[in-house]
Length: 178
Figure 1 (cartoon, rainbow, N blue to C red):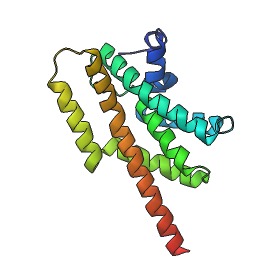
Figure 2 (cartoon, one colour):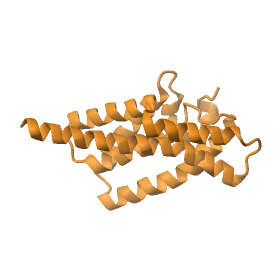
Figure 3 (cartoon, rainbow, N blue to C red):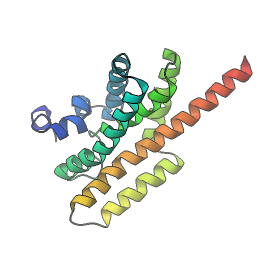
Figure 4 (cartoon, rainbow, N blue to C red):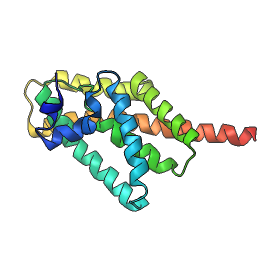
């Protein structure tokens, strides 16, 4: 099992494990998402919307590599401690809803964690598709490693999209009640 000493040996591991949040013994995805939320709240004071979007985009591309690489090092398809995917996806949610009240941010957090954990509908289909792809491959090439990383990232992006859809429906419902 990965530990702090193992994680800090490589920058890719530090990022993949969300600066240590993925080492949480309980609910590492939730810990990574909470850490992403905290980082976003601080970063929004220093980055413009454009800079934040570029950082998220670069982080998503980088994530395909680091999630695939660290997954391969661990010999696991989508190890729970790899939380960079949750972090990027939740930053994507936050960039589109901010500024928002703490209640709306909390609702976004809850919806995202629900969609990421339960994997309903299209999220589950995506997750199963990429895990099946992994079953069909014995040895990993560089392109297969990137594809594995993409598979790790994309179901969380789908969870982010469904979260944004759920937040939009919430806003519509609130507007009709007012």
